[in-house]
Image 1 (tube, rainbow, N blue to C red):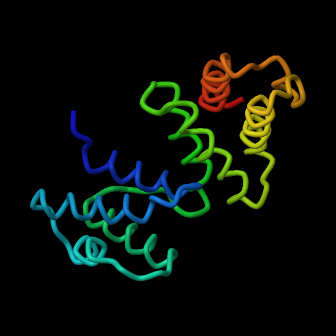
Image 2 (cartoon, rainbow, N blue to C red; image 1 turned 135 degrees about the vertical axis):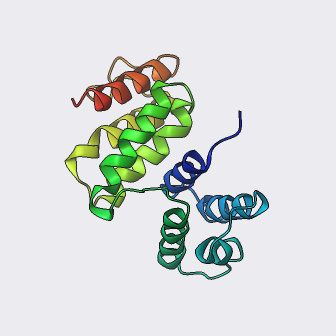
Length: 164
């Protein structure tokens, strides 16, 4: 089932977190819109973007989304909104826990180390230690193993959705 424009825009926005492919995701989204017959000034500019300034790329992406009638969160709401959206994707099974964790950890860094997002850093550190053969080092994940990580990750994502 192909993604609709809003889902593709949200996925591209989420890629801004901790991944280098976000530039191609945003530009690719605009190209797909043009190929689908949906155009606009910002969409056209974004599809041909070749500048280095990431802030300008994101600004243009937001303008293109607005042209398409897609409401993205305001910047002060963006990180909690992205956390919730990523958690929904993980809980629903549309994103693998291992793919979601780096994006969620990036929220903590991008927020200026806001405690609301510290669980993702702890979970990420716990996984890194497990990969090195060190078990039980990070609370509250001391009982986690590499085999139980996906279940633990989904449980943490579900807690965010429940407001915990």
